[in-house]
Length: 333
Image (cartoon, rainbow, N blue to C red; front, side, top):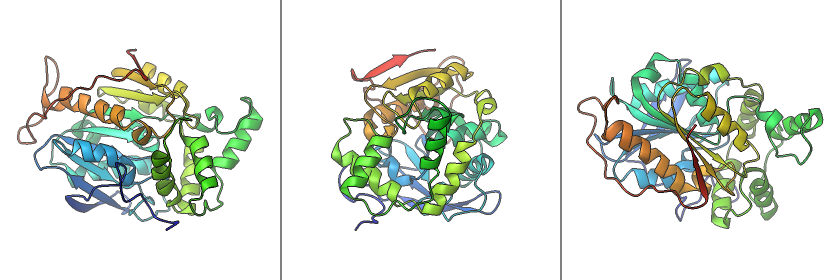
């Protein structure tokens, strides 16, 4: 099927949720939420990016649900969440807060991970009291706080007004993407993935991205083009790790470096050599390891000066080797 919304076999096929629920946002928007893993386990909340869905996190969900309670939701208009006229950074923050209220107990804390627009969601929500109540730590993957069109390298032109204008037209196009074809896969791989991305990873990304409704893709592209969350980054006070792909054309690694430098409490920057924008699918082990490292430290094994989980929200998770392979460069700002 050309419009299949995700692959149905292999490591990037989304596992069935243990339960599903609906979170209702401030403006009444209804958000599809999936819960995986055991009740009482350390909680992880996953926010996907522009044109994606909960299926984008399949590899992380499958691995983390072994010893975590994984909560993934579809951003408004994406996946199984109905579209809404309100497409703003404020709406993204409202939606994340609504997911917290629907899926977490009062005072329960979670590690919150966001990819691309999901990372922008975390930044936008950083100043909310509900975020302070529920977020123990955060992971920002392949994201930026602003200047997204100016700094994107999808169009092979020198930086300047012409590239910005053409990039805006390309990313903001309202033309339907059409079926997933060999040509479509090549275009998507060039724009969003590293040159060495395997065919199964390209296919997984293509199925998800091409399933996003054209109107939703266009509406959110306009929001991202005007995004300015620099002030919100300064409010993201929880321990936060940053991941960027060295071959990312949509949010070049300079964005990750800028975030790491601006965050009040950055726990480290990981640059993935040869990896593009789709880090959770291109480098699933690295992203999963980063989430697990945060839960191990800030939810399950608090040390001096660190806040433990509230009583009754879970016990320690099993630990495993999270040593990065040689394609990663660890930096501590």
